[in-house]
Image (tube, rainbow, N blue to C red; front, side, top):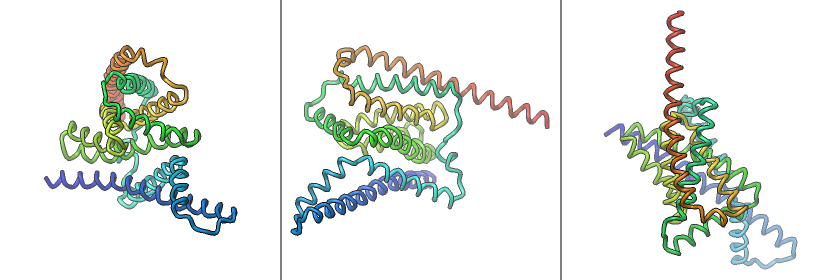
Length: 292
């Protein structure tokens, strides 16, 4: 019981640190935006303070530069985690299981991402959902994709997926997995991951993605395949939002089934590749030991 509380407490601290950094990043961005708006109003000769107007313009500017908020969040959280690892004299890569993988494992990770995109993105089209839930999902997606393209590419497609994997599948899952059955650790991690994504449908969808990411993380024994999958997933969402997927919607049933088959096959092959790599490593150790 003591170990459960200890490891769960550590997982909670890592999670709250990330969320706290997100809050700080939002406040910093809001203050900067308010300063810029104030300067512009002063240069325009507006001497009378209009609080309502400033608040409205600040919100618009912050939402339009959400990528900046995400960037500050990533840098703050990563800096704090590195400092904590330094103080505790732990290796960051070992704490989050950033283990080297083979080129074949990289290809299998991309294969898994293709399968998950087909299964989760297009599978959603097959589920009869209340209109208000769908509208909330579309609205959230539109808001996220309304930021400048460079922010979407750098932050939404690359930096945030990497950081979220370090936090959730790295720190949080690793701690929970030491304190409870793996299945329960996967569920809790995935629910937390879903909870930070907003509306009910967004949260449920993200939680499902989180389960897939956890499975890939477990089967591969490394965080890198999950990072690859997450980056590919976000990048595909960005591309589909830019070019549209209306023409593909009619093929949703086929794409969903194909995605399930591809994802399942990729996970099986990832597990086999990990066993092959571990067996190869064991042979190398035996050879070195024998030679000594």
